Every structure is written in C-alpha cells, then in structure tokens.
Length: 85
Image 1 (spheres, helix red, strand yellow):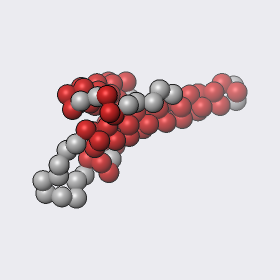
Image 2 (tube, helix red, strand yellow):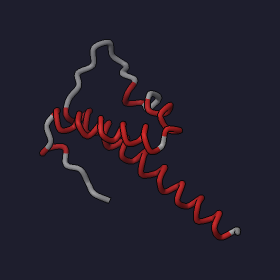
Image 3 (cartoon, one colour):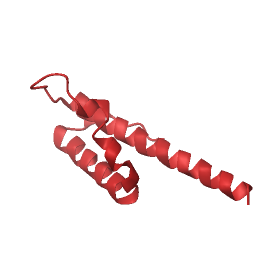
Image 4 (cartoon, rainbow, N blue to C red):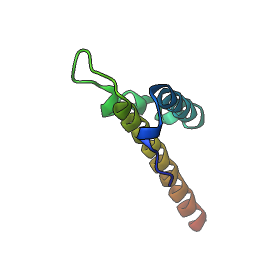
C-alpha cells in the first residue's frame, strides 16, 4: 500500500484528492455514501475549527483506509462465495 506524504502536498492538492476519492466512493460504492458524513473527522467539535494540511491529510487517509478496507472485505466475501459453490 502506498504511503502518502503530507509534507509534500499543499491544501489544494489534498482537497483535490479528497474530492476524487469521495466521488469514487459515491460512484463505485454508493452503499457507502451514507457513512461519509458519519466519519469522526467530518464532525468538528469546535465552532470554527482551523483546517490545516495535517487535518486534510488525516481525512484523506481515513477515506483511503475506509475504501481499501471495504474493497478487501468485498473481495474476501466474493472468494468465500466461490469456494462454497
């Protein structure tokens, strides 16, 4: 799995990556769309939270891990189905 480097990316790059992965989730796995708004990082505990590149990177990483975990889980379920045929 590729490790993402927060230090080499600026806010615009991270925002673009977040938009791209969010759109991918919505397009390829619409059943997950409801979970996007429930992710803890999207629910700030402050009224006016400061959004830093570190926060954006953490959010992107959480989306990436969420998608990767789901895809692995689906692949495992598909493999089990094939074994049971």
